[in-house]
Amino acid sequence: MNSTTPAAALAAPGSVGVVTAKRVDFQRPLPLRSGAVIDRYELAYESYGTLNAARSNAVLVCHALNASHHVAGTYAEDPRSVGWWDNLVGPGKPLGTDRFFVVGVNNLGGCHGSTGPASINPATGRHWGAQFPLVTVEDWVEAQARLADELGIERFAAVIGGSLGAMQALQWTISHPERVRHALVIAAAPKLSAQNIAFNEVARQAITTDPDFHGGDYYAHAVVPRRGLRLARMLGHITYLSDDAMAEKFGRALRTGSIKFNFDVEFEIESYLRYQGDKFSEYFDANTYLRITKALDYFDPAAECGGDLAKAMARAKAGFLVVSFTSDWRFSPARSREIVKALVDNRLDVSYAEIDAPHGHDAFLMDDERYHGVVRAYLDGIDVR
Image (cartoon, rainbow, N blue to C red):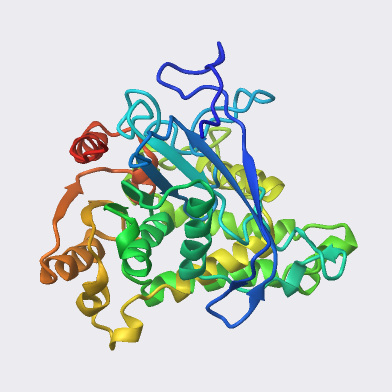
């Protein structure tokens, strides 16, 4: 069950080394919350560490919007391809692969190996494109549970994620309370605010109004709605950073030292955002972006309980670590405290840490000793015998 090979010379100390992605082909139909059904699909995943004989040390890492199953390590063909949570996952790291068997999966509808809009629809022989159904956090959890079955994992020692990944961890405790012992819910909210939905809608409009979008079937035209993707990423990136972090990193610095009185890039922050947008548009699928932001919008476990989050969480049996960051204005600490209250109301075992960090929403990806220390201490307390 170990998909890692001995660490390459280029791998950083504490890295899991060179890794290889795997795929599982599921031929049993998956009913979706929308009423649609995916008859056959693949999920891409990676694993690090070794599954113990009792199969009791597995940890599922759920990814956020633009991440994937590539959580840690590097690929042999590209030593720069470091996993998105490599600073947290590895031998001796907070999520130690010397103790845990860690699994990362690219969600259904993604664009990094799992079946998604850019995949070929076997019924038509063409790209799914606009015909790929909308998927939800609940759908992802069901697909992840099927992957766990394939790997012989009856119960996860922990499910962990940040942002949208944290929402999946929370949903696991509702959908499959018997299959998760602990949930680490980091930089999350129990549902999006109207402002957050608004940000997502502006990003979607940037994509769908791009002349190269072609109603979502741009594959047949051999084009990419690159301009829309660039704008969507630029907007999103602004919301992931705090004002203080942007001020410290860029301030009002000019690229050339003087104002040019034109609409070209003049400020360093403009250059940075355009770079991020250009890079994103090179590797991410526009249809996937639309669907993931909709999954974010739809997530609201309390909706079926009259808006009562405590009632929605009544099925949960896991222990919880909830972590927030003071400068995260997109998913503020107040939103994490809503989750904590709902858990406490159900007399569940919950620990809460509010980290004073300047990085904004992206803080869950950063190297922060206090944050990593909290995660390490919690995971060290999990008995995996």
